[in-house]
Image (cartoon, rainbow, N blue to C red; front, side, top):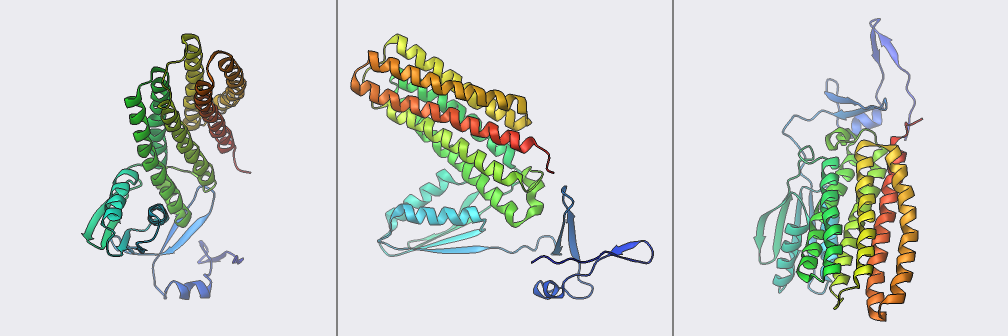
Length: 337
């Protein structure tokens, strides 16, 4: 609830303002209690009770995993606590859930950054989230996500065209690494929502940036999903495409990959001209995909057309997500009124 208070002057040069009595009592302040004031770039001030350095509240969440529950539900519940910023997460298991417990440990290792196992017994796991946002700020995490995703796109198309199933499996596996950075980045953004002074710690300038970057990291995660999908679909093809069709798909994929790379380039530099170019190029690629699909229908058998169409559709979606990133880049570059 907002309140309006007037600034007063005392001693001729010191500006003061009174604090709401209800708030003072709720946070335990008394006469002489120290407070911390942080100024933000938008002109706001954040006022908090002072806590001695080294004294921090450890947040803890507890989950009960039941034997008849779906495994995916348990994982989703755990990840939701990770994203909300809990320091300690405990999972308690019913008897006879040893296999699920091992599977959860595997997911934690493969999907989450900064999570360490503290305790384990037959019926519980206790993990701690040891996250230092300043060591891997949001923009750095996003950049690493994007690099991994770029190689995923390139290798996924190559595995499809060359029928390289081993490479395809490697691409699918790499999607876990992108997910790790994605979930870590979401945790950072949720941290900033609770603690606005953390903006600078994760590399952002204003609160409005949070929504834009939340959509962007989701777009990159979706792009990686489509790269993995191309690799998975490609493993279903048993014969190589004709050289002419193969060359055209490769050329199309190169243009799509370039659009994605340019969208990230424009974002990291807030280059609006480059962002506009990305959007225009993405729109052109939609027509290219339609023309290429028509050509494949005329030259390949029904099963090959079906599999190849799924690959082309994923490439088109990558271009569209890249355009979304570019559009948000333009929005982020505009000064607030």
